[in-house]
Length: 117
Image (spheres, rainbow, N blue to C red):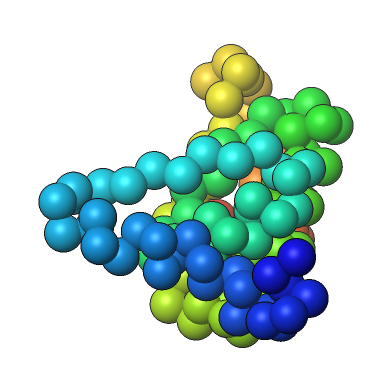
């Protein structure tokens, strides 16, 4: 495995592979499931911005916390990666109590304040 031989620098492999292509695109989207830690690490190593979708159920929030943990580690390898935002879906817009709970979970996971949810 490349991580064993190259160390944490291996997490820049996707970024290195995408460099020749990025001049042809305005936006490159990498979608990965949060439980695939290796793919999340590769995506975070290549990303400039992260837009994290989540649901308000326990599975969605666990996945968000997993990505948040990997995000913190990725900033050591890719210091330019930033959190663009967290998008809550599958919840009624009138569910203010749920939005407040998710906002608190997002702030705790990513270490920041989030005004909109």
